Amino acid sequence: MPGGYSRALDVLAYLVRHRDAATVADIAEGVRLTKATAYRLVEELVEDGWLARSDSPMRLVPTARVAAIGLRSIERHLREALFANGVQLAQATKSHVAVGIYEGDSVFYTDVIQVFGDSVRTRLEGRIIPAAMVAAGRIYLAYMDDAARDAIIARGAPRLTETTLTEPGQIAAAVASAAELNYGWAEGDYHRGVSGIAVAVFGSGGTPVGSFTCGHEGPLAALESLVPAMRHYAEKASIELGYRGRVRAGFA
Image 1: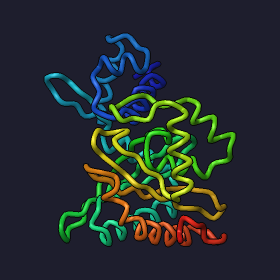
Image 2: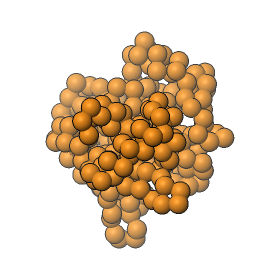
Image 3: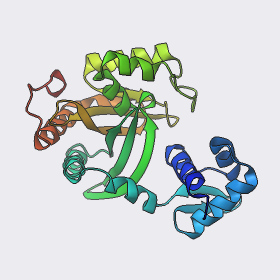
Image 4: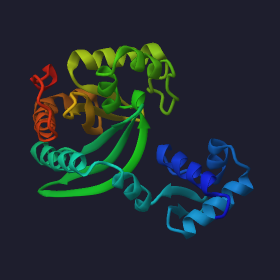
């Protein structure tokens, strides 16, 4: 697509950050393109295997090919430690686990690990979500320096459900709660009725590099019993990644 690489990348970046499958109209508005240009780019990206579409009405999502590009940019040891311990956490708790890696002001979800009885299934996720909107991001923000955290919180968040925390004051309170509890939480902020609890994983530099999130459709309180196991596997992954500082209260 001569001359259109930049705009094609903008379309892919928009869809990776978009919560649900998007229409051409959504893409045109989100990337500030005409509908004709958006439709042409979408057709080319579908033909080249970067997007998958459904018909009537047409909606689009990135394929695993897009997720694979993001995963190649991640340090191999980091992803291996997070993935292996995420699988063990899912098996120990019989809970679904989302593995996240921190990037700037966002959480890049690399894998989702699902448990069905004795069977464990994994899938590439490749989705990027603003830190302020999810449990993993809120514990990430809790460990940031004040200036960086305040700048991110000040942006607020878009309303996706009736329970999304959108105002900076609401988000700040959730982050302060995460700092006190030593785990992040979200209750229906990103998907209606879905609650999540997340713990951070630390790297050799002593800063958060990734996370484990356990979630389900239901009340937040039902997940609290999983926190000890989540902390155990977060500590284990942190040590494998070279974290040698004093064990934080979050691992206690």
